[in-house]
Amino acid sequence: QGNPYMCNNECDASTQELAHPPELMFDLEGRHPSTFWQSTTWKDYPKPLHVNITLSWNKTIELTDNIVITFESGRPDQMILEKSLDYGRTWQPYQYYATDCLDAFHMDPKSVRDLSQQTVLEIICTEEYSTGYMTNSKIIHFEIKDRFAFFAGPRLHNMASLYGQLDTTKKLRDFFTITDLRIRLLRPATGEIYVDEQHLARYFYAISDIRVYGRCKCNLHATGCKEENKRLLCECEHNTTGPDCGKCKKNYQGRPWSPGSYLPIPKGTANICIPSISSIGNCECFGHSNRCSYIELLNTVICVSCKHNTRGQHCELCRLGYFRNASAELDDENVCIDCYCNPFGSVHDRCNDRGFCECKEGTSGPKCDKCLPGYIWHSLGCQPNVCDNELLHCQNGGTCINNVRCQCPAAYTGILCEKLKCERDPGGCSHSS
Image 1 (tube, rainbow, N blue to C red):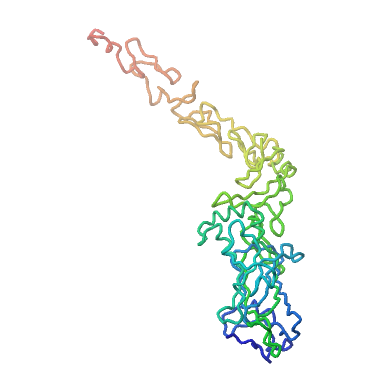
Image 2 (cartoon, helix red, strand yellow):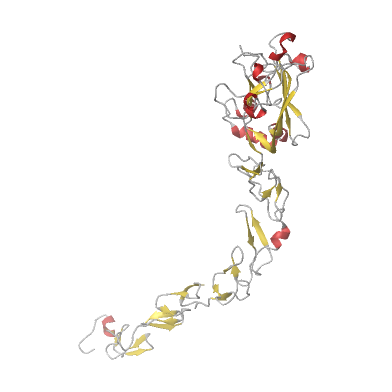
């Protein structure tokens, strides 16, 4: 049996060694005996022994696992767990706990197992956790995971179904969301039908541990929180801002803010805040455009219809066929100069950042408008020389005409006049020919 006189005569809030302050509900457990907070005793019986314990985060929290309260005094005969969604201004009951729900709260006793998908938001009174001083019955739960299981299955394997419900049902999201919790202790554990008025010191509350598992609510616009000046703040992404990333940043109000979405599973949808029309109109394009467009996939703004032969996200590059004028500033209308690559001598109309074109074989010069030695320019650009007066001589008395052909004597033919015409005759060449 648990000891109803835990502190006995050693309790003294004014003495550090004998005090049992509220901080001991939140220190690290694992030591034996456990540290615990203890209330005053029920010395004013029959006046009710009411105690409120309030937990505040100054932040909206989404619960992810069961709330667990460990009592060292025996679990109370009557208790209410309450929640607030507005930082303690208003409160709603989360769950009632009693040894006799009908007598204490005029409610029929239920457990979470009696609920369903359709009734999961029902506020119930349970008698499961109010059973006096049993040493193996210290813990009270508020069952979060059992409620998740109505959508995700008993082992929570189908989380996609749960996320789908949370995404589309605001009341369900709000049910698992809090800014504050309040534990209202209304009647201590008596373990008996009647209260022993001769030993009122045995009646009190003592709690060694309160555990609340959750994450910052950031409307799926942040992956975490940071603590700043003893406050939890979402590390907002997607151009959002605010304590819960609940609004779009200035200049990013091109469409109404909306929370991120779990759907489609598994990656969800970010619902990024896009730039306002006014901010897009003033986007940085170095004076080469006055219009921008927001690309949601890349979460970036790009200039549209760049002028003055420019291109790029900010009109900071030159179009193909133009190169940067090194003597001009980026906002100069003449910042990009035509490459002027010779269409017959260059591979294409593009040049490098110094204005040099890529030349075809046998062609040279910055604009590919000159021929290398051994080549000659004609209507289709540089072509290899057919003949010259140095290496490629016309034979048999032929004459080189403009390096492109040999003018052969009447009896000869071929590129270099190297063949007799009579070789083409059916009878071949005779001695006389």
